[in-house]
Image (cartoon, rainbow, N blue to C red; front, side, top):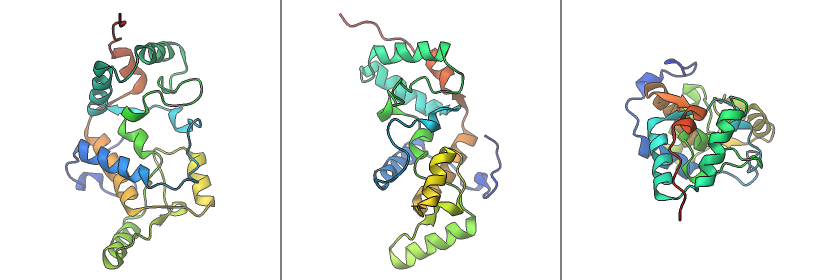
Amino acid sequence: MGKNHEFIDINSIGRIDYKDLRRSLLQENKLLPSEHPCCKGKGNCCERNIPVSEKDVQIISGAIQRGDIPRSVIAQAKERAATSKQNRCPFLNPRNECSIYPYRPIVCIEARAGGTAHPKQLEATVQQYAETGTDPGIPVCNTRTSHMCAECHQQMADAGMKFSSRGVRNHYALIAYLSNNPSIPMPEVVAKLPLPKRRK
């Protein structure tokens, strides 16, 4: 992902703390409406190269070491990484469900909840939030997205749905984080993950 973004100078955001960003993204996900078109078993956003940061790898590796991710999941992901089409995430199982969902990368967490808006629109929304205590949100039809699939984004726009101002700020923060921290595609991550020993 390049250093410059169409709507904002992401280098002006400053240092982004991974833990804070992940926590904020997870909180935003909990607030999404039930009618959100991105749902379990759809998997469109997993059919592309997913940038994985070093911190993401640490979370996945830690879960493997603790035994939170079964050996069979890693073995199947390694097999898919070696045999399936390149852009599909190896952790997407045959039912189009994420097999490491609690430990998924931050780009996967954010995919449902944010897009880019014109800075003036975001500034006006944040100001209104500060004055009224209520977040008016930003209509999805007025945003662009880097991580959500085009189908879900269009369905949200057609339904008149909105992103929260925090969701949009998170999106910018994620772009900045990925631009300033090396990332590798998920199939390469899976190929390097250790396969846990079989439990006796």
